[in-house]
Length: 128
Image 1 (cartoon, helix red, strand yellow):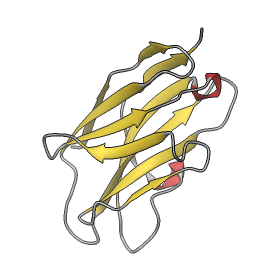
Image 2: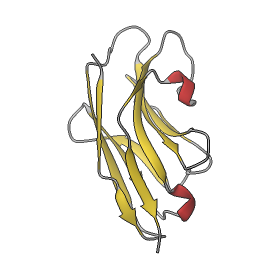
Image 3: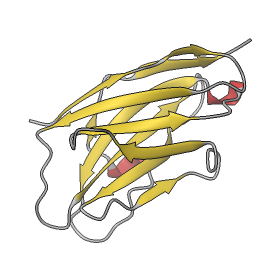
């Protein structure tokens, strides 16, 4: 059973920084590998994939809306994935979900539909 547990959300001022953490367990590492990422959903808007990290290559991807401001990386333990958020703006306010999926082929891990496993979500609010 795949479990994804997020932590680190909260309120931050515009221009500030925040790090979200996700502890992953039970995710398959066989076949064509897997991806762990972050999807956000702001009030009244569609879900948006913001970043993902591939296994076993550790290739990373980030959406244009957060490129150069957000970074996804593995934590100190192999089953932890971090989302480092810098220079945040009010438009970054959303519920952030840690997500994971197993690749059957070479499909990209860049859309919410790819991810079959979701955490409970954690709120990030950017406000002065």
